[in-house]
Image 1 (spheres, rainbow, N blue to C red):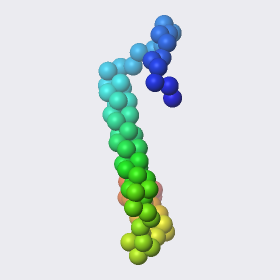
Image 2: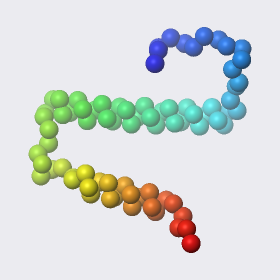
Image 3: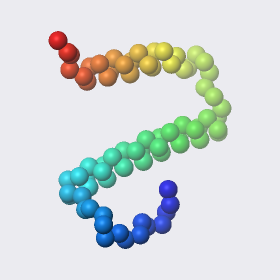
Image 4: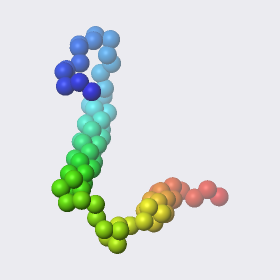
Length: 77
């Protein structure tokens, strides 16, 4: 993405204030997630990879994530 402002386009449709606020909140959350990911990468670059004993197997992470998703979704009869 470019750091330059987008050219003004009269054909653009303005968002409702609530939608604009929601979009800004999503952008802030995405930026925070990217900052956290960058910090992890910088830590690895500085200190190396963690030992295997200190890591969680991806299968466990996957199962925990699937359980969270299942808990969020209503059951189908």
